[in-house]
Amino acid sequence: MASKSSSVTVQASNQVVGTKLTPKELLQIQRLVDLGEFLGVSDFLRSAVREKLESIEIVQTRNISLKTAKKEVLGYFEKYSEAFPSDAANALSLDLETVHKLTKELIAEKRLEVINND
Image (cartoon, rainbow, N blue to C red; front, side):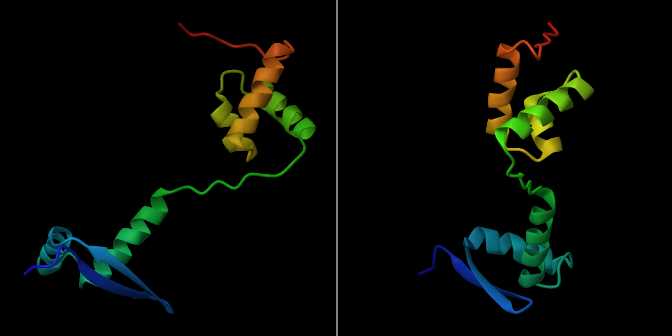
């Protein structure tokens, strides 16, 4: 009776990581290996992990006071008049939720204006 998944263990540096693959996934990988695209299953998995890690941007946020953050957010929008809160959050390394909150406050204080491009 065939198992529903196969286990593959990969060694990277000094760490060994195990994962379960379905027979279909393992067969697809093995076909790529047989075609010479990869040296083996482990080579494929290392390549897949590297590709995934390169595609993910890790954003670290700064821990600053709300007063300081508010000044920075206002300064960002003064410099870049047509920008989104997410742009400011990324550029200033601030938490997106905090930037949204501060943006709303700045709009309510009439220190920031919403531009509608209908």
